Image: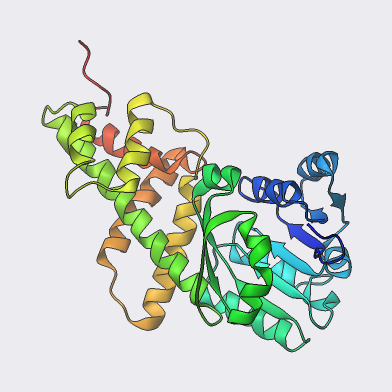
Amino acid sequence: MDAAQTPRVGFIGLGKMGRPMAANLLQAGFPLIVHNRSRGAVEEMVARGAFAASGPGDIAAASDIVLTCLPDPAAVEAVYLGPGGLVASVRVGQTFVDTSTVGLGTSRSIAAALSSRGAQFLDAPVSGGVAGAEAASLTIMVGGEAETFERVRPVLAAMGQRLHHVGPTGSGTVVKLANQLLVGINVAGVAEAMVLGVKAGADPRTMLDVLSTSYGGSRMLERVVPLMLERRFDGGTPVDLLRKDLGLIADLAAELGVPIAGGETARRVFDAASAAHHGTRDMAAVVLPLEGAVGVEVVPRRE
């Protein structure tokens, strides 16, 4: 990589997803400056060769391209629009890329604020989970100007294998919310189907083998059922993260007048899991309240 042409990249948000994404940028040779509320994650990145910033303003001052990977709309709005935030320190010609999952209004308001200061913005949420972030194999769905997307493509390519420019500002956010709606519905449906089958006497491992090659099969079936069988519910994508997304989806659907009966059902299933103190566990844990309600566990039969 030509150092004279390599953009300086800022990265804010070194959580489960952000940390491996930032590590892949370093691996690809981008000069990287990072910020995170937890200093441990920053120190880890510094040990790998990144530079530390004291806040969003420092990131904006030192970077050509700034990426954010934050847990919810409130955090995104604080980092961009709050005192000492990115917008307050923006320079003409900079590009900002938000990989967080937020609402459509959040993406559009940040884009407008940056545009008024002469900067470009891409809403670029990602899919693929922690495993995809670690393997740099994420799917990245990008809304914004096509020219801006092409300019930052090398940066995105360091983190993902499937890069999609899906339309103008906000389009990436909309496609990601549609994806999360399907994820929530699929996981809730898988949990219900597995509990129903086991309660009726079916072996869950046999169910997985058959369903995965049938019309009822899905990526979520293949992802979450092995975790249920092995009782591995820690790590991965938390229940409460999907609950947040399902709430954003419900807000957008209400705003547009679109009925989402399946989404409402999925949200109740995720709410029940969170209420049962499984909010920080992997989304496969939505099966636990269902199991408890009928007195079975989705585990293989004993020989």
